[in-house]
Amino acid sequence: DKELNDMLKERGNEGIYEELDSNVLTRQYRHLAAHKYHLVTRRVTQQTGKGRRHRMYDLVVVGNGDGLVGYGEGKHEEIAHARRLAENQALRSMDAVERFESRTIWTDMSIKLGATRILMRPRPVGFGLHCNPHIHQVLKAAGIKDVSAKLWDSRNPMNVIKATCMMIKAGNA
Picture 1 (spheres, helix red, strand yellow):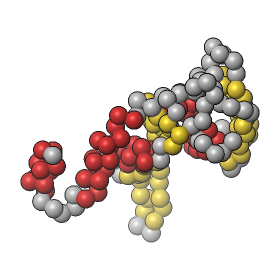
Picture 2 (cartoon, one colour; picture 1 turned 90 degrees about the horizontal axis):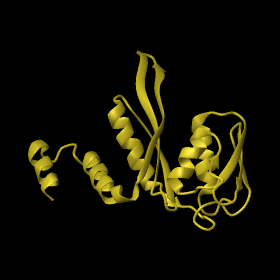
Picture 3 (cartoon, helix red, strand yellow; picture 1 turned 30 degrees about the vertical axis):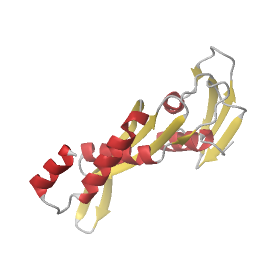
């Protein structure tokens, strides 16, 4: 691979393994991620004995729009690196979603994660996605087209996204 040889010439063998793994992984699964949404980007702070340590946090949802979806989280001093970490984790966590007639879920589903409670119901053809915007992006990435969802209590975007992914992935109905 020409890109790999160029990288080795530039840097030698030191400290290249982490970047090499992420580049190979990204290239290998890039065709699966037709949908990629950066839904949560935050600046987080860790208080240490030497003062405050600021970093960037990013949560990404990826999917192929045809039954595969995954989410990933990344944290780093630079936002670009945090996004790359999150995308790689999302690609690794992609899993199948069971869909009825390739457009909706099979049955009513509910989940509780932290203080977030979600109820999703299948809907008829042409109904669309009537739900919270974060749930909408996850379902769109998974290729689900006709669902209504109700959200109670906490609307923390991180918990909403994680709970939705857990609920729709195969085996969690």
